[in-house]
Length: 327
Image 1 (tube, rainbow, N blue to C red):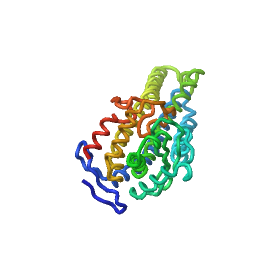
Image 2 (image 1 turned 30 degrees about the vertical axis):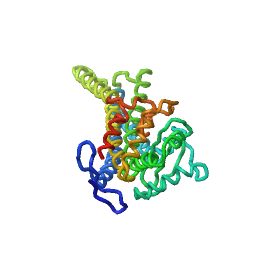
Image 3 (image 1 turned 180 degrees about the vertical axis):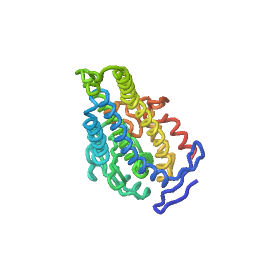
Image 4 (image 1 turned 90 degrees about the horizontal axis):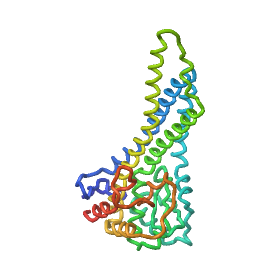
């Protein structure tokens, strides 16, 4: 079932549902490559939008619009890479945990970090009775885990170990960096779309003033501009939708792998399965957080846990529990 690595964490695990063997080292390397590739793709996509925007409004301003889009894309990437963790923690209302106040959580996390072979992440607590947790950061050396007060109070030690190991898996597998970059891609496209809509409201799309021509060329120029308008609309409307659906699909897939990896870290799939059962049964006060960070939590703070649709941030919790029991 497993192939142990130097830290004691298996380098190869077997998916409990499909029986397919997964190399964690290959998965980590793929996440690192895809993180940087996403940054480049985002800059290229925004550059294309900037070019089309210039062709629709004023071709003479192409350099300006392309540069604006490139700066926006690069800025979003830099912010997501270097400051995404602090933004996520702030959006969730997390505060630093202390050994005096949260000794139980600190002890559990230190033990799990040893088993996972990663540095102990910074710990944060969210003052909410709703049980939940998430991990953030760009790599294992710069990572944080936030846990709600309700999670600490509700779970026994084995269950809390399972939850912390799940979040530790996201850190070790570089899931959090990849998801931050993917979220930045969506955000940058949405920002540029909103800017274009505002320009449209103020009449910026006046008809390609830089390509006014006379005679027979005018019809061809209008057709070309029409094509540019269609392409721009497609990128601005469908781009965020497709990118969001991709982000959610990737998020669901990574939850399954984090469950499996976390179970192998603790050598106790039942601990995490029991924790998920308690989370599914919870009927108390919900955790109010912004939409941008909901996909980061171990379960969606607001959605129905068993929902199955393309816009779900997490797979059905019953399916996750079943896969853990099969391990």
